[in-house]
Amino acid sequence: MATIFTTWQALYLAMLDQAAAFYGGKLQVASYDYTNGGNTQRMQYRTEKEFQDGLEYVKKQAQLEASGISATAIAPAVGRTYARNAGRG
Image 1 (cartoon, rainbow, N blue to C red):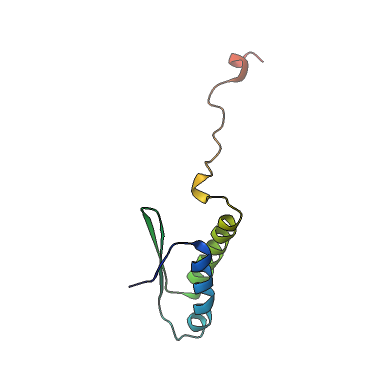
Image 2 (spheres, helix red, strand yellow):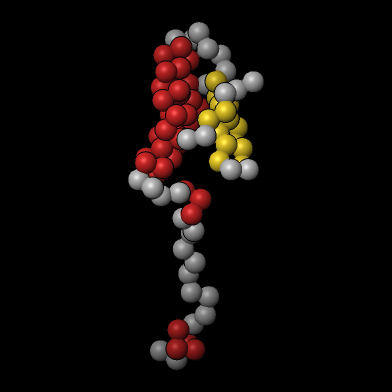
């Protein structure tokens, strides 16, 4: 069973610690669980490319967390769904 992390920063540091073992071939599968409230996100990496991409994702989440911005709080922009001035110019 994977260790459960409650902060992105802790997960990022753990991934950095295991990076050498993963890249050296001593670790075949890296698996991590991140829990935020009731949400649990499982991340599992089997290749170096997957691990590197995952490390970048977790690093960005840790940076957002450190700056006080929640990635889930950022809503995507919604464009206008009607014609401005009722289409008259």
